[in-house]
Length: 465
Image (cartoon, rainbow, N blue to C red; front, side, top):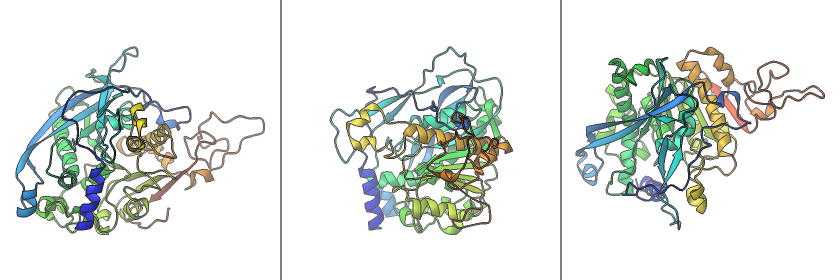
């Protein structure tokens, strides 16, 4: 118990309280997050649709509260949990209409006070606020869950990109620090309790909208094609949502009163009997909680039946690549699964680039950027593979599987011979002209520094097929 409490305090001690004011200090508008560069792989580029965004609000009066009293009595008082969801969707917008979606993010710096650093910043998106939906549809639904103390806008490089390709993308704001539990440990306990529950609540709300054909968004949702995407603590949540029941004796979960957490555990019969046939694909970026004894048993991870894509860096020291993320991939034997590994990358996989103000100090900067990989490159490659995976499983486009079934586990081992005096540098590998042994969809000399592992359902361990 003492070790876990210390870990939680350190994790949350890195974050200061969220600003009580609603004022926003606009030090940057980031325009590059959703625009892949010239070196981006084929499927990273935006789709044919302009993107609209609307924000929905939901509240739940029966949410259990993790308080000091709850730890003493085992039962917490209920409170009203309020969630907002940014709904991104294909929109009917003329090409000359400017994007006006602005998302808010905030810094969490507790180890050091950075002179001049604002508590909030703004992210200029590519979407048009409250734009009319496109007439076509319905579209597959993708529910997205951010990392600890992130906001929906911090993931806009991926989410807006998906919406432009014909997806309804529901990005939950879990509002991790908006409420004020008594201590950082209790705040983290609330996150552990609610991450998966929030996803399940919002999915039910959106499926109800679809069933009622409620205009304008309900009519856009295809309730028979559903994907989950989560980053870090969001990844922890989507794995539980997809069938990996928590271990009631898990070391990292002992800061949540057992009676509160039990309905989400592997040991709970109701949880075990809950059908997850409605889920078609799960993407987990750097999922937290995978170390043995922390959150899941091997058998719980094996209960994930949904196709799974994990995207990670092999130097992740937050979720722990070798003991945590690799273990999730190895033990999720009920799933057909893939794992994309960025060599030498750390934990920050999917956020937008750091605002200019973050460069005032390494502490805020390191919550966005990676010391080795360019942010734009991480986003572009991730968008490429997430698009392939979701198109395959949510749109039944079986041709996209070839982008995941790469010819070499290590991308740098791929070979694409170029004839003398020819220049293939601006061509995408398409399986012809000598590119048969190169990663599909990458430009020549651009598939560098990555690995792709795959394991079929029924197989466990680290050996690729």
